[in-house]
Length: 116
Image (tube, rainbow, N blue to C red; front, side):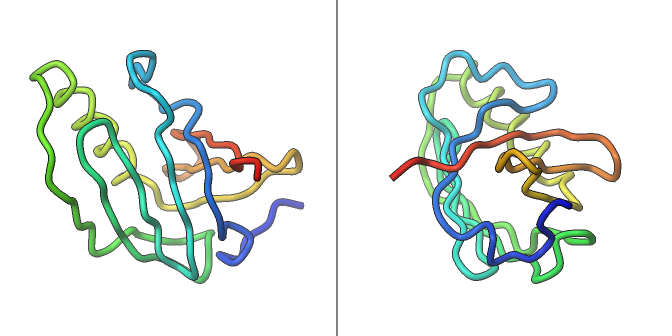
């Protein structure tokens, strides 16, 4: 059964895939979870948001972004990436240890735990 408590997320994760977003041009996009707070990096900026403790019905709020600018193409991809994260209302760590973020029943983001 998938884990549904925010404590299982604590630590660093590398984003592998995001629905409808081409991540090919970017190096590791990273999430760091710590006690109901998500710290993340997108191509140009960083962000922070809170959630939980229940992973089955959540909303990331408030969503704060840090500075940084990139070229126009990268900024468009980053906007799409951030929009997908804003749609997340459920997360789980599946039986294989992969983080999957959902918008209702549609998976929209996949990440793996950073080894270390």
